[in-house]
Image (cartoon, rainbow, N blue to C red; front, side):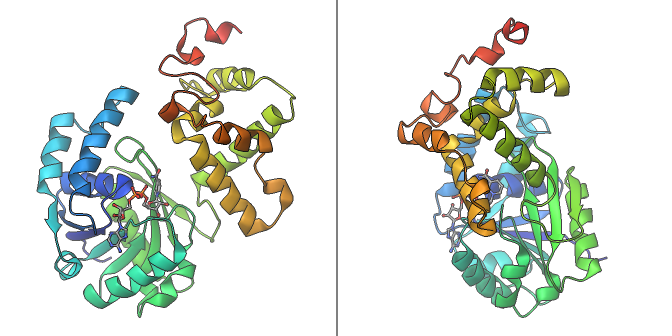
Length: 298
Ligand SMILES: NC(=O)c1ccc[n+]([C@@H]2O[C@H](COP(=O)([O-])OP(=O)(O)OC[C@H]3O[C@@H](n4cnc5c(N)ncnc54)[C@H](O)[C@@H]3O)[C@@H](O)[C@H]2O)c1
């Protein structure tokens, strides 16, 4: 297995910042680069707000998380970030052309033995690996949001990824206190997003078709799983526009009209009912019904 000591993060927005801090906390020498030099600090500020809102901090004490944030070295030049990296994680926006372009740059700047990973939510590495000279070292390492507290990470290889690269990635994931979810054969949505996607598709269908009240689905889910919100509460948290876009990308991929998200969801988005971020989605915020003690009584 390869030894990872230095980690380069390309893209320090929502997810890149969280990944960089997680790795820095667990002793890696982390360097980060973003086109926008202010974004790392701005994102930290947003994450602090998110922690407050969720009432849930990172997996380590907040003070240690803050200390780890100071350990991440920011570079103005991507070459500086990558020149000694053992592992590079690309965390730029979800756009295939952009990712391919960035991978070509990363491939040219990182040491030849470095492993190159994408945090993409939906693009399998097999579509990106060809833009590098080292497809055998390329893979998907996909963190779930919010990465500060959701410690599951998909690991999926491409068409040429060598087992050593997969094993090294899994070991890296474990070493930062996360659970690797190896995907043995390429599947859209990786391990857990595929499951979550099936839940979203069925529950949206049941709601939009008028079969049941969405609150009853959430009640049943909360009792069944012991969670503090159901699928509709979760979708409100993610943002209904984000949910819609993700469902559309699955639909565009399969070309199956049954995969198209319901029009009723699109109507909510058009009315700016996007969930927690606009104060209204399936529920009304900041005091959604499902937090009331009598919610589970129906
Ligand atoms: N946000 C989520 O919930 C989530 C969850 C899991 C995976 N992801 C995936 O992570 C990736 C990033 O998502 P995000 O939400 O962090 O996006 P984001 O928009 O918050 O951050 C992306 C960052 O990349 C930077 N960037 C753009 N072009 C660049 C370039 N050429 N060089 C360097 N930096 C560049 C931007 O300035 C921005 O700061 C996407 O592939 C997304 O699918 C996101």
